Length: 155
Image 1 (cartoon, helix red, strand yellow):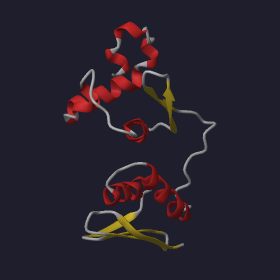
Image 2: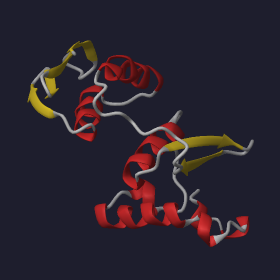
Image 3: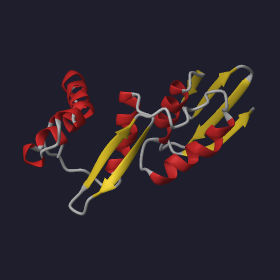
Image 4: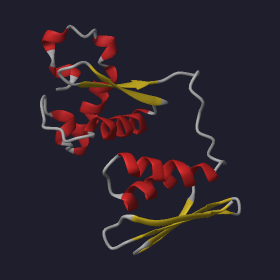
């Protein structure tokens, strides 16, 4: 249940700003999970939602707070959280495999968008994505199910 849909919770309006922004995005893009008061969420959905919300809202982080009857996803924006250094492409070699090991998602689409977010030039073929910037290159190869087979870099 979205915070904006839970009138009995007494959540102050100032804490609903981001969930209302996501609702608006959902209305524009016709994303039912963002616009329906209630929806069935699968296992680890809260982490997917946290990643999506952080990206769409330019948040610095997210936190999943389990309160017993469910999990609340909070986005966090703070100058105390270090920004991602887009020039440290070597971090992608460790961070991306950690991401896909913890969350069930389309590896190829996730990697493509991960590189887009880091402002890399991208070349995509059926089973491979190359991302480059400033003479540094990342290469990911995928199997027929779009799962990551290998990830290498010339850093």
